[in-house]
Image (cartoon, rainbow over all chains, first blue to last red; front, side, top):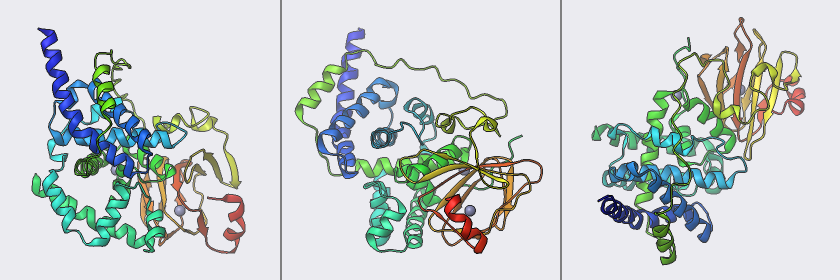
Length: 168
Length: 221
Ligand SMILES: [Zn+2]
Ligand SMILES: [Zn+2]
């Protein structure tokens, strides 16, 4: 009986794996992680999810948030010599994630909000989330003054927040 | 009593922390604030769910088939790390203590035991090794006025103990000052105890005034 449950668990986990691992991999490569290292980290993030079985049975939104956090932290730890310099550890994360679905973004609506952002705002969000660039790096790269980088990001966040308010 | 936190990071700072795009020195200051701030934990969760959704919408780049096989095989292995029992946060007052995230980067467990370096009378500093940007602890003697200064880049400051006042308001333990280059200020530490802050920045400060300018090469904050 347990074996059957175990078998089913594996199947449902592998569905999650097939859905999310290509996206986590894509995210990490966007951050500049070299291809085989990105696959290593993706594998590590997904296995961490398996080891916290109660997590992957949640809604997709919660799973994507959790994987985003873990992939980000794994990558940052690899990048920096000191591990865990600025983020909670995975164990602490798994406790934190246990709340309030109103904090989860609704994917389609969020992407619609993204699509409606003016070009400079969307590009600052993109560089920040996908390329992991700091405000001053974005300023340098785009030639925008630092203050404009921040205000663009601030306006984009205001639109995201509007989305959360509507979702509640 | 830990006073109520009044000053928080700006939206763009929190979202950049969520995106993993703050330099380490600045992320450390935000991370320490988050450990005590429920309001910002909620905001962070939203920013991270934005990250999750954006990640989920990326063009798929599947892993090699061998990876899938390897993962499937590993599912039978016992979990590598036993789940640590979650230690409940001490109910006792934590204001004035070193935040755990910071503590592991420091050579002593109490502020008074740290190897502070006096930079000018009434101001001590301790650099914290960070891979990106400059992070340091600053200890301002009770009642001391700092020189008037502005910042060339961003300066994030978390008040750990005591408090100070400047034109932006009163900052107490737990409060977060998120300043950019346009702000010129002169913090004055409270009279009753030394003010200890954690600061992180990605560019050196630009002090104003002739004496301050002379000090700058030594202070390097
Ligand atoms: Zn806060
Ligand atoms: Zn300052």
